[in-house]
Length: 251
Image 1: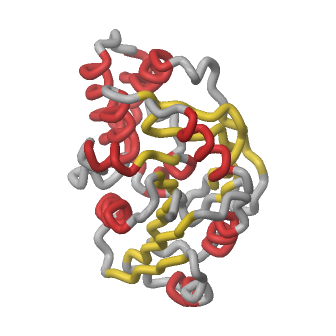
Image 2: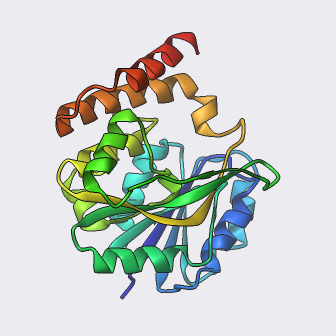
């Protein structure tokens, strides 16, 4: 029986794809399947994936482009594991990432989603910054942070499949920032945590969706902020809200 399903959706992600896939294959915890969705790529992605199609743990799906949100929901429905780990095609997971997150979810039955601390790297793998948060085990603190913005790296998370399905999966009306919306909806009813260890490299380049689609990302981020304020009954943090609105206007 498979414990973990790792889901990756790719659209023209040839540059760092091999390093990303290999970081999952080299995990210390090995009872996983790896669902890789090639979402209509037109670069060399398909040829790179051909080298992995015969791996026992890997399932490659080629499809016409339908976008990240719908592709992730498709992957969740196909997943056999009770836990689902996200992975992006340009990021890198530390070897003990899956092991640490599975142990955490096994121990904390009331937790729906667990992310990790992470390090931002540039295109050549140099560390730009280390992302850490204080008091992250405090559930109220998590909700306060979510009112200000998305504090969880999408590609670092592991979550419970049954709860994600129960809460309606990713909202397919949200093409960008779909993770922030999902964390807010989940945090309304369940605990969310971040393991206070760096277990993930997030690659930050000009080709990231968050940069290429910055205005749309900011638009959906503001909507999620309003949703968090409404759900959690927290006072409006005007500084962060206005900061995003101003960015939205001038970008």
